[in-house]
Image (cartoon, rainbow, N blue to C red; front, side):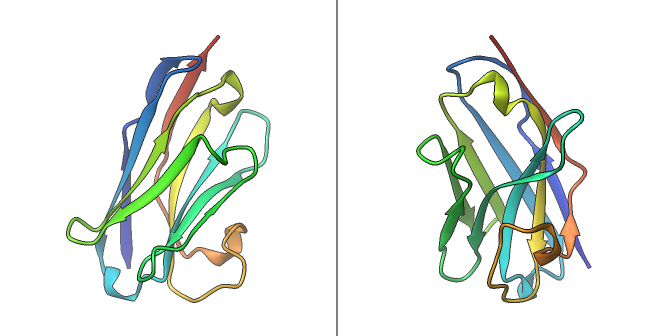
Length: 125
């Protein structure tokens, strides 16, 4: 089992920045990749970004490319998501997820085995 705990959410004005963290614990040695998803009220949970644990290869949704940056810290078993130029449309609950198995498509929910509880990000206009 892997436990994931997100932090760093909050309220920010449009154009501002936030950094989300996701601390992993438990059997993390078998982690292949970690990702961030988000879910706005009344909408489906959607992919935001992902990073492979060993090689650090990154993937982003088109809607956040150039504004969000995902990174990982081996020593701390933590994944970060730096979010800049935030827009009201970025308002959502952000979830961290971990995948155990190599997947050809890290942008789908089914690629992930473990999920955090989520952290709220609200961007005011």
